Image 1 (cartoon, rainbow, N blue to C red):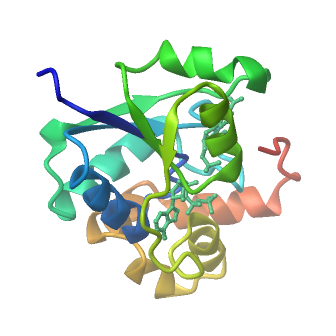
Image 2: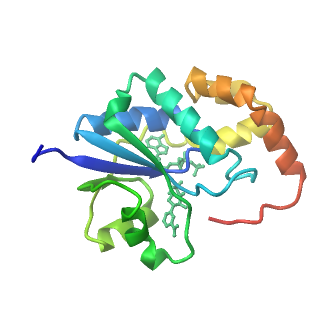
Length: 181
Ligand SMILES: Nc1ncnc2c1ncn2[C@@H]1O[C@H](COP(=O)(O)OP(=O)(O)OP(=O)(O)O)[C@@H](O)[C@H]1O
Ligand SMILES: NC(=O)c1ccc[n+]([C@@H]2O[C@H](COP(=O)(O)O)[C@@H](O)[C@H]2O)c1
């Protein structure tokens, strides 16, 4: 138990894609247990964050299962954003089990964690131009089915069951997105 290493990985998972799953698989080759924080937990039904935190937990668990990830080594923790970035680390720490290392490709998140004394590592990146949730949401909005190859089948199925494409289109025709994160 003494040498057990717990890591942390953060994203919004709007929606989860293969890049996330493959990166998480790689991270699990380096450490024993991984905390996956789903950030912006309070946001949903906006263009940048169309899916609820419950839907994202559901999609992420199924995506990881489909990718062959051992879910007994994963702890998923939803965390709402706060206004005060300087206070964010202490807030984050109060939501998660103790961890020794964090993985992120987001320079802003890396800065906040390093300043708090956490070791930050860059996980392997899988074709970021292709596998990123912004692009997936754009393809969904255009009714371009190429998004379906970028995510596990189980995510396609959940998006269908919750009428995710219709939701995105309805949001896009409505008022401008009120939040910028
Ligand atoms: N293709 C990828 N390969 C490896 N890691 C990725 C990939 N895409 C995103 N990540 C990592 O996932 C984390 C961010 O998760 P997030 O859910 O915001 O993904 P995203 O695809 O960047 O989404 P969005 O475009 O909506 O911001 C970052 O640490 C980022 O480096
Ligand atoms: N002040 C805060 O609440 C704060 C600070 C840094 C990151 N975060 C969150 O961490 C997550 C990072 O994921 P992204 O790489 O998708 O931005 C986002 O949900 C982001 O909002 C929140």
